[in-house]
Amino acid sequence: MFRSSTIKHAPSLRRSYFQWFPCLKRSYSTPTSRSSNYVRLVEVGPRDGLQNEPHPIPPPIKADLVNRLGQAGIQSLEVGSFVSPRWIPQMAGTAEVLALIDPLPMADYAVLVPNMKGLDEVLRILAASKSPDSAAKPPPPVTEIAIFTAATDAFAQANTNVTVSESLARLAPVARAALDAKLKVRGYVSVIITCPYSGRVDPKRIRDVARELFQMGCYEVSLGDTTGAGTPASIRAALEEVLKEADGHRLAGHFHDTNGTALANIFAALELGVRTFDTSVGGLGGCPYSPGATGNVATEDVVYALTGESLYGDSGEPYSVDSQSPDLKAKWDVGPVSLPLLAETGAWISEILGRETTSRAGRAYLARRQRERQLAEKAQAKL
Image (tube, rainbow, N blue to C red; front, side, top):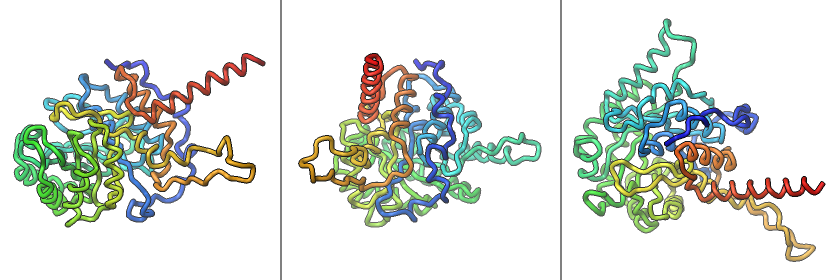
């Protein structure tokens, strides 16, 4: 059970966003205009990470999570969904979450919609904020919607009660209406490696579904290893088939870490040109329709794996008096993301949920901080 007493921000997180990251005062550049080593992280913890919790999370806690992630430098956030609470009660209250978010100028905020009814609710909220009779509060920070389908009929029927082709037919007018409303549209394809109901997935099915999503206007398609069964070899095989028709910069990887291979799968995808990955702070997540699947790959772990070598500092024991420490610069650029703030956020939300963070990089950072604090206290006691 969550602990509501920890809803409020820590004082340090109340500081100005630009105080933490002055570099963001420059104009925002899209992934396509960045260097080929820029890796965009889409934080799905507030939505995909919390949808598998046994108890619904109050909207103020969800909004606080989104705000903390923004303070940590995350610029792409999926904040909730407009799925019927009857099917996924954990996602109730997304409209309230949107009203409580402190939007950041450099961030994109997305919501998941399953059908036209969900989009109508998003558009109603946006229209109400523009009404002359509405309060002075700025409109909800929704810049895009995400739509979802699957690579197998069995999973699509379990998830949405329709086949893949039926789901695509249902999603096409949703995408069109969203684009007409000047919202970006992102697509999801679930179970790209194995399906919990029908087994191994043929990569050609993934290719065909991704093609349909692109044709209906999705600017990016996220390919989901929902069961977490993927290995670098199987991820490569799936991507190589999709890349016959799609550019790597228009694909994203969404890898659950059920078998501990998510990071290896990310590096396999990077080799093939994919530069966007969905991650979840603290390793939150799972899937209600994929029994046994664990959480998404932890945001902290991905940030460390891509940039950790830049944190080593100078060598404490040089090889010789004339030798210099190797200049280890990170190959990958994840933007203005703060690993310490991410680790603290992962620990905070995990404590609310009544458990420890599953992020290994997060736990390592917190352990180092605790050790440093203890050493400082011992040093102070000797004075």
